Image (cartoon, rainbow, N blue to C red; front, side, top):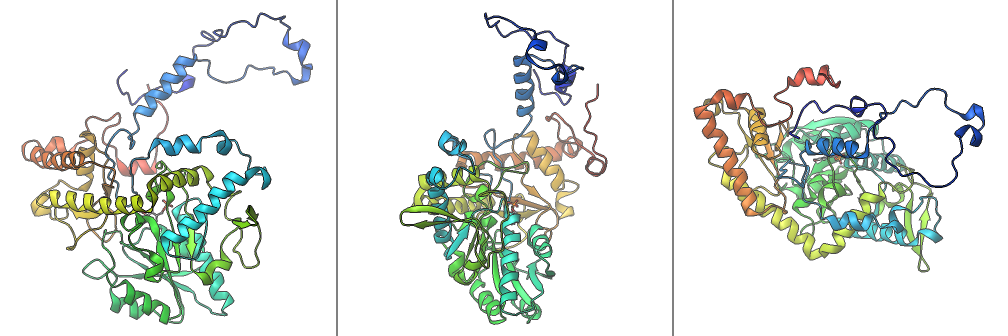
Length: 486
Ligand SMILES: *Cc1c(COP(=O)(O)O)cnc(C)c1O
């Protein structure tokens, strides 16, 4: 069946009974339901569920699933999201019944295997980030940020320090200021320098006795490594503030450099980005935090510790900021990341980061004659191009570029982010892509420019190959119409 925007709902597929009786009769003695259940427990109206056969259900969901673009079907260079291929062994091992069927309240005795993995994961993440301790229960990057900000607030309060403001560069992901605000801080936005990095003079202007922390992403969202990180670290700490590391871009440096060695006090790690595990469409995720020695007392609970060869659950500690999620967080995601890390080992993790950077630099150089970068300098694992030069690109803006890439079988890169770059196209190929795929992507971009010369209208009205054609973006957001229409 061809892809059809108007896949009916299961209720619309209902044909009122046909196909219900495909199960064989039991062969045993049959009794009327009224003889088995008391009258008041019996339903008077038939249950309002669609009557459809098993193959109809399977085909319905299979058709729907084919309308999703996914990492298993194609290249997904969505900048900042690290959409790498997820090895299936992660899923297979996380699905072992000993893990997937374990009840979270089973108790320590019965949960030693899972607890051991959680304990080891805390240790690995602290080691990889160069910090002293880690907690696994935040359920996403943004949740880790909130956790980090709450710990920083508790720490300053304990010091008797009234620090009210968190500094965030204008290149940051929107969750950074949002998380700091949720934790009760005021936000001061730092304007980036002309090189796309933190402007030291701007930082000095804002740092004072009210500064609680600076939140940084390194490499930042432009894919550039903050080369003055040690000077930044000294300025921030000399002012009595703490340094927060948004770990979304850890895939650039994992196994090569450690945020702790750069002086960061708190790090969140997006397991669902750097350490594989499927994500997209809003979940599931896992955003553990790692902290330096002086923040360890504030880590959220539960924590897993090892005592006399037993793994134990610590549910309470005097200064902890408390519990942030049910039970132990998204254990299924943590298990996948654990398998992935054990499969790779430290050397494999290092090699992945190096290859991710190599792939990004290769693709950037393949594209550089077609679309310029906003900033000079070698990119790390991702790079940001700009189509803002109207004299050169005409009406072919980033949205049109994205839709035409979709028509050519590629997921669109991140568009219009970071906010400081006009007509931004943010591309992150990851280490799991071959040279052949990167070349095909570069050729697809070139072919869009060629088509724009010969048939600009077609390019500007893309997509043409998708179940749903070009949407009115504003109307789709303001007045979504989710109903099926004949
Ligand atoms: C993805 C991302 C986040 C937020 O992480 P989630 O897991 O989506 O909550 C924060 N900062 C940057 C730079 C990101 O790319």
